[in-house]
Image (cartoon, rainbow, N blue to C red; front, side, top):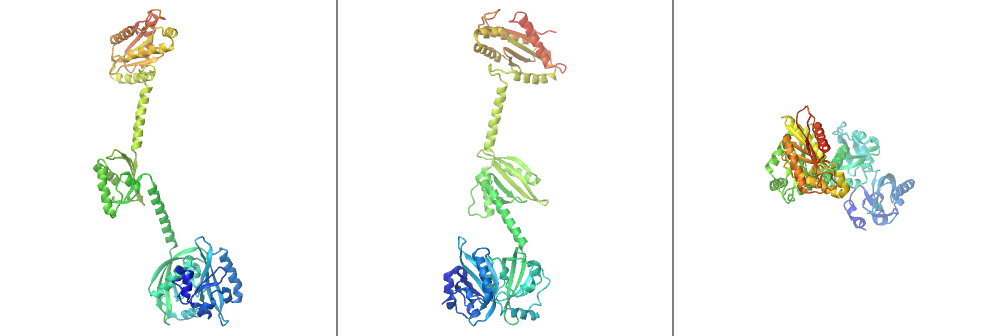
Amino acid sequence: MDIKNISTKQNPNKYQEIIDVKNAVIFQLDINMNFTSLNAEWINLTSYTVEETLGTNFTKYVKGEDEIVLQQHFDILVEGRRDGIVLEIGVVSKQGVAADAHLFLRADLDVNQHIISFSGTLTCLSSRRPNVAAFMENESNYRFITENMSDMVAVLAEDGLVLYASPSHAAILGRNLDDYIGSYPITHIHPDDWERIFHFFHEMIAEWRAAEIEYRCMHNNGEWLYLEMRGTPIKGPDGKIQVISVSRDITLRKKAEEELRQTTMKLKTLIASLPYGVKAEDENGNTTLYNDSYLNLFTFKPRGNENEEEYQQQLMSDARDIIQNFDSYQLKKKEIAESHQLCRAEKVQLKDGRMIEMDAVPMEENGRFDGYLWIYRDVTEEKKAEQKLQEANQLFQKLSMVDGLTGIANRRCFDDTLEKTWGQLTAHSELLSLMLIDIDFFKAFNDLYGHQAGDSCLQSIGGILKELPLEPDGLAARYGGEEFVVLLPGRNVDQAVEVARSIQETVKQAHIPHKGSSISERITLSIGISTMKVTNSHQHASLIMEADRALYQAKDNGRNRIKVYHC
């Protein structure tokens, strides 16, 4: 029976390359520990042919006292408590002679992680151990090895047996050199790496070339270390093939590389998922990174077959057609970059009307400036919302200064205007006149005609006051209830009286009936006037108080009168 055909049928991808390896038995077992494939090295180890061995149980060829230990370890594999086992067992030949052999056995899993078979190697130790002693006796074989090297230096036989190991193995791997020399390093290699190492080792010898490989090896404390090994095949003094290996611990480097990979991956994922545009530039202004949001924000064309330099030139050309005042934009960026300072919320106007907000974040490490991170956000809608809010606030502010019933200024507007006007007139000691206006017998009007008619009356008076020629600085306002106030900056007493008479006449011509009045059948007004020169020594409250006293005199003297306050 052809062992190549058997192995290929069982697992062509896994065993095709190693089936002809010498010095090691490569085999496969089913879940009952029966042989399903073997290579020709089995004949050299046991004298049994492949044909008569296939289908028989592995324990048949194991020395009696080792069967129980083998079965225990096999059960451990079946239960899934370990991925692989390493043992030294006695293998009994067809002639009944037991030979010490090194066994490595691991479980083969399907895509659902169920055990479907077991694969392993058997290497005879009896014939190899003398080789170790012979090597050690021949000083010329290891004289060139530096005992004080920090890297691990080893000499391996053609089948991987350790003939020599430098003292650094003890420091790096925690190994006892006496136990390590004469063993097979594969027993300490991670189960996921041992087959790759196996191929590497035999291909290096077959192709007679130096080669490098990274793999995981177990420290004596159970931790996995990453090692980098360079192997070189040589011919020993006796003509036998040997391999010089130089290995170093790269665990920290691999951890750093993995951390960097994870960090880079997270950074790229983060930047790619950001809803705003991001672009990084080095200290010379060259773009080193950008995300799709940056391209979409500026409606840049997606990258085609151009190289990076060509694509950057295309982006620059597109930017000129997209950004309003592109030269000013470039100049601003240059000023920011030269300052090495953080810059927030710079505005970039696009030709399509959109507004972009730009942040510039300097990137520094250990005091060295490494460039800028530019962050772009489309704030067009925000600006529109801000404009609408501003307009709404202005409208609200305007409405808050208007009397809701009459449509003229309210008491709040009057108070603010009086204070502002007072401050403006103080510097030049100018005149300021103020009149308080009261609708005569307004309570009686409400009682007779109703509150709705009373509101209409107030609206009529407000409309008359609104039409007064008070520009540019005068103001007519509802003071409260049926009282109104008129502010006349720069007008003297005579001018104020003239305005008051004009108001009374206009109201008279309005013919608003008032049968509840004891002095007229129409609505009439009483008006009090106060005029003073605005100085720091006078308070504007005095102006109101004097006008109020004058109004009281007008009402006390029969109403429908104009009175000027006199000291």
